[in-house]
Length: 397
Image 1 (cartoon, rainbow, N blue to C red):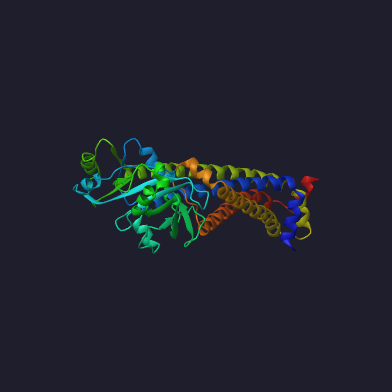
Image 2 (cartoon, rainbow, N blue to C red):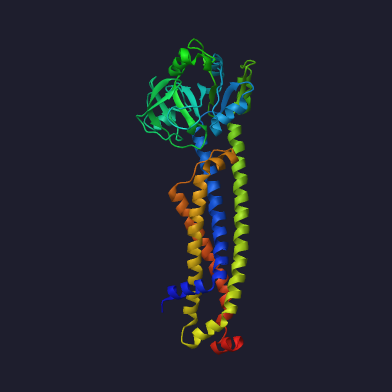
């Protein structure tokens, strides 16, 4: 007896029931898979941001904290300028381990791609925020005519890009972080001064090669240093034009937000599974009751209850497989097509899970749906197993 063929025939025969079960499992899969992608992407983005953000605090121009935050975590290009002579004072504060400055210059045209770009001038030898990341990508030096691009750029190493009328050779590409560095392009400080000194760019820069400027001064505290005490000491060194921004506090706030989304996701999934489980139990119970005549007829011709149970289980499994596959494809397409919009709606670092992580999620969904179907079938079939073939046919008659 070809159980799969019989099960498929029954699915086509009972179209309404099949469609209802399909939709229930599809919505369950979509909810779990979508929630897992969202929470997983936020967790991964937060972890990468923590790993890459090597500083505890940053000094930024007063009144530009929001702009600096958007640049660091959301990739919104901006231009921030202040005198970086304060850097030496901060470095001399007891409890401060490292200090490095970065210069942010917004550029709306990369000359290569439709990406709003944040040009970031760094000193690759002293930068402890981006520098270690570059070393992981085997980038040990950066020349004045070279540039390193974030993951958002569709370009290859060795190609050339043009910023402010100057061509740069792409020396390397960085992996995705889900934060502002994905849309950033890194150049040397000397290259930034060359751009500012070019007569064609004079009206686009508020500094010259003779100015000592920065957009952010990153601060790394010594291990064991008291954060509050160090913050007070550093703030005492700042002038009227600078303010101190806590990276550590911001990352803590982001972690709390991600935690809230995870809790909501767990509650939603538990509610979703319970609702679907009860619905499938009711549907399978009604279905079996309405098919008593069919079941009785199969029993009278020698088909065992075990084989009949297999037919019903296979029916549900075929519908489940189609629903989970459809939910996976649909959720994946939504995630890819609307990735940018989803990321912007959360305002948090967002990195899509890898193929292996998604495959594990699909296996998890299949297991959960199989468990739900099995439980709903067991209770419904308990009644059938107690009946006799003649009784089933007689009741319907």
